Image (tube, rainbow, N blue to C red; front, top):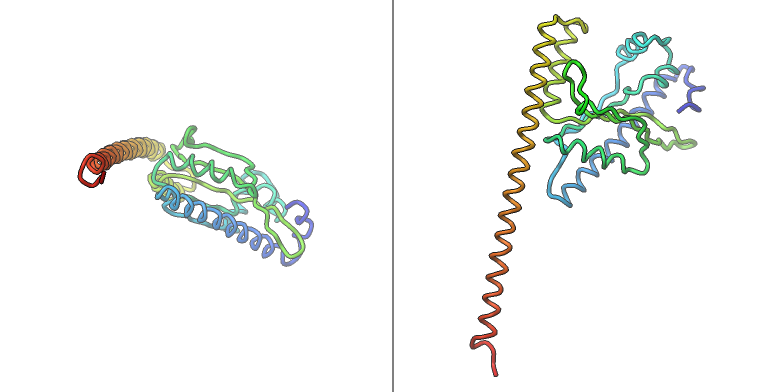
Length: 239
């Protein structure tokens, strides 16, 4: 996107930037839907429960630039703010998160720029999620513009906690009392334990189903063998 930055300071610069980020969201969203449909077709299972997209508000962009010590400009916005265009994938189980991350990373026309694994390394607040910053080419009539999109992948439980944590901290403008921060961390631990338990239950269910399918296969094989033996040794065989 650096080549396009030179043209951003005209009167239509903001509209140009937002147009590119919206186009990037469409591109990434379509890829994710196709991956989900393919997974359903092959494995009879959808790893993605929900897909949420959003463009960061101008107010949030300005606050983040100032907080990070950058002058407020469209050039700095494009260069330093990586989560202007955001996609959030909500999964059922933690195993789905890493499976999806691998599938996204294998897309030949997406470039993975950075990865932040807040599941293996949670934030101090207790926040857990898997973040991927990708670059997607936007093909315009006369050029190709690489545009950044942040992809967050988390379970339903992680998303529930993060949504409430955001609302609580928003009310305190990031300065919540210590006891609230402590309780939120405890809740994050409960969420983590719930995710672990649900994953364990799902794996146990899958093991039972595979075992049952194996028993059904053996029974069907034995039945077919008995039928075949009866045909060979019985009156159906004419000499």
